[in-house]
Length: 315
Length: 105
Image (cartoon, rainbow over all chains, first blue to last red; front, side):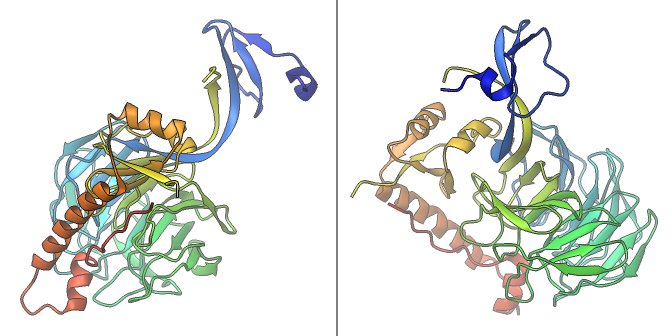
């Protein structure tokens, strides 16, 4: 049987602190902790996070996995909660309670827009970390839309005005401007990215669900490769149109997870609980999914992928 | 025929209920009524059930719990109506009616 030195070309090294830039597969002995450690690539898995205080579906989210914001949802609420990587804390409500809205930004500087009050609303609210303030409306009132970007540079796309739409609007920190529509108008879609580099995927083209994916370059949408699994009411995470995660959705089972590499979607490990009509935020390698229909309306799941340092144990 | 799955009732307490290592080792499925499906005859599945103090149920017992929860959700959906609203408008407003669920052996 080959030993470590034969495989790696060196003996296992001793360190007083973990090496700064270990190679994948490298093993070392940490003298301070007196443990054997390795740097390995985790293909990604979901774990449970803290439950929302107010269970709901059709809510919106913003932020990252360890500093997220949840707001709005059904049954119609303006409830806003922040997540610290472990638990959710209740904060001040939206000014206009609604569901089927979209969000953008961070935990302390977010934007909430559109939704169903009812009726369909164009209301946009800005979050400063403490409270919501109403700002200028969307040009097209709609719900079941999606958004991404930041509090001062956001993008709103898709949704329903009573019928599906591909309307896309760009926010400059003060007002919304209508820009080029999605090629495929739809509602209950998911998205990822920024105002100038976004991805739209899945959704419902009144009524059949779709796997269609479109990439936004700051000016227009281009059709790219479809999701492997057709679905609506899914959630998404990702920082631009080259890296995203799609998860959950109104399909059986509602646990499917796919990763986007800029060209195509690859199926990765499923969610443990699964959900639909919920919210997602974060990145392709550290995502957060929360909310959904009863009985998982309070559930939170965390996705982590990538190289990690791990202590080697005997079990 | 040997069963493929086992079922238990356990309340998801949030962080740490299912961790990444467990998720990598076991395929979980969750169902209404705090029903969890994990592989049968599986050391890691058994360890997880012990960790969460899960109450093991037969498939039929688990199915009965799921059925009751789904019926409650369907009744709530049926009772949520707005005067003059069409079936399509209702689905647009609150989503589709919760579907029946059949557990696997």
